Length: 228
Image: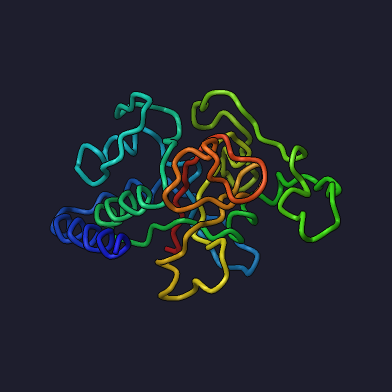
């Protein structure tokens, strides 16, 4: 029922913006990256910012208002967004830009992050029943306040902040059996950052105890990619 309501709302938003001139700035900011299979993926060099989000709110495309003050000049990533919030933003951004913008898959994100990956520590337990806690306490989880976009490492591909303290939602479901049409009913998705986590779709604050696996991320944000 909730998913249907969200789908109807997104559809109405797309129709309301269909006649607007396309804004190509979102796509023009993207960096072409050659992926493992040889195809080119266009990737936003930084996460969606609070300033970007403010424009969506201003256009009444996004209903979520972050607790921290957000203005059209806010230079830091937007955080505290859940999966439903992101799809409101995607509907708005795609209507404005002509379509094609989406979240990366887990495998795409990992390829973008390939130069920053560090060797994993030996698991604390080998018993598969304790797999959920095998790396607890060993996972890096950079803290502190959300920093200005571009404050962390920039890869050779030109992608920044993959190692920052804002974890990024992906489009990969954390539960098997939710492929194809069923993907819309996925209850939790993979979130990538200093380590991988699994986050329920409604969660905005992982520190509240909703993280399904491992050390909770510090903040939740997202990055856009496009196949064209």
